[in-house]
Image 1: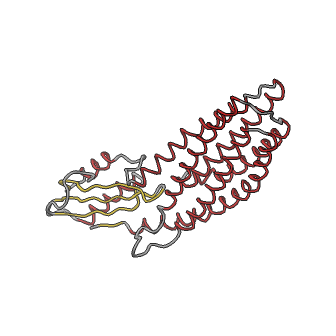
Image 2: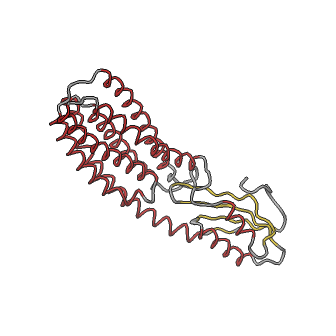
Image 3: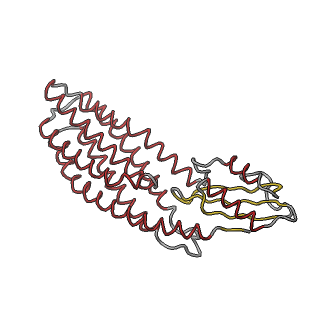
Length: 304
């Protein structure tokens, strides 16, 4: 049986460094969004703008998402123990899934409220609406700049980034809405913008939720082709069959693989394992475990 320990150790060190960096980014974003949240809620109530309140609702979920994401990183750094041999890194995926569910609920509520406002549109104070939305845009742009790099390697950070990005678009929408209402007096623009913000967020939220669920269900990572990995392993010299092949992710970008390799009696195990590890590494899989067999043991169907 072969296991790539060095790769695991190197990857753990890299993950720890990335985790510290992401913690700092999240702390900055929480400070920015949390400080502005209160002002935006008050501004939305005083100006009677649903679009502004919609943006405030997303800002509220941002603060929640960022706090949960920060907690997820802190918990994820806890060392593995005899009960959780992979540690707590999966927690960040739970956080990403929770953020997606919250966004779904908020979007549905905003669209319902928009329907009520469209029937009976209230008077909207465009000046205050414009000022608050402009400040919100600046805060969101700064937060996006802070979170962007971390979102490329972590679903947890990606979830937080998407929510801030949605708020940024919301702020732009509110600014445009305030200008339209001021010059045209068309009050229905406000609830229409709120609905558009919600409709923009939903597809991206669904993608985040789908990716999170795939990891929680231990599905094959979207960037890995199971059949291709199976074919390359089966093509190795001395390998007669590959079975019990499993590929999954512990958390974002941390893929694992286990497989049984049925080999000829005269195959050199150490050389074969090195080649198998290289194939896995080529597909972005650093945590591998291969079992060498002279007789078939286990399930013949690959992936089972």
